[in-house]
Length: 354
Image (tube, rainbow, N blue to C red; front, side):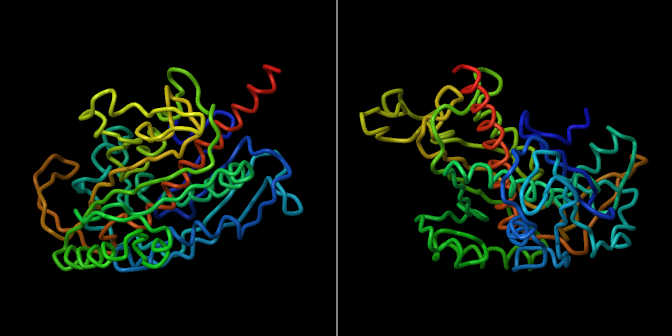
């Protein structure tokens, strides 16, 4: 197993490297007769695309998607869908100085010890560039869950220690940080400027809300939907932690505080984050992911080379100051993929139990 696939019935396999000729994805299990065009996929790619805003790399990738298979006359055929996004602004020569050096915080060290290959060109397969394929697949998953009235909204909850104190959905699209608190967004912009000027980077927290999800999605024990969501989100290179509902705060509550009272009209609170015993309960799913700071920074750091010799390194070039906001559509995509898979699995169960 290569570890490049996710899903059971709705299965996604990504391929490609940061500085290879292209990034791509194959999607298996998409039902037939779903309307789908390249423009439906392009919207999410444009949100993830580099070269926009203060926090992101100036690498200029158009990220234009091409559908190679699985679509006929604007609708899915039920056969594998293959998508390709070509790399047009890769500059591998910028990485010549780190050809034999392991960059702190990157996958350079671990990939080398696993495969014995040092692809120094922007991190190769370990690069965040790989996530463009996830977003493309997520757009298709979104078409599946959208037909069932399931919708996902993600936004910046925290950046560089600054927390959004209010949630206004109208504010999300009014700032490039995609923060639902306009006052906090201004402070976050200032924090990004400070980090950029000091040659450093900052991390943050993305909150993801799923509305309209029916009860009953998820499998017992090992395929619990919260377990699959956590795995999907932690598979994003920058994510170091996942909370669902009350998350770690639940450890500080009593049982009577943490339990969500049930009434004929539904749940009175949502500490469970829309999931009980690994199965959705019909309430809003609430997820938060902690994103680490970008590893490539100009500040001098200690490391070793491939020969084990100690060296110091200062990383120059085109790098993000923060994964936020570009990581937001990636988080949405991974949640969409998991929900689409579990939705299809539930439909099979409903058919077989009739």
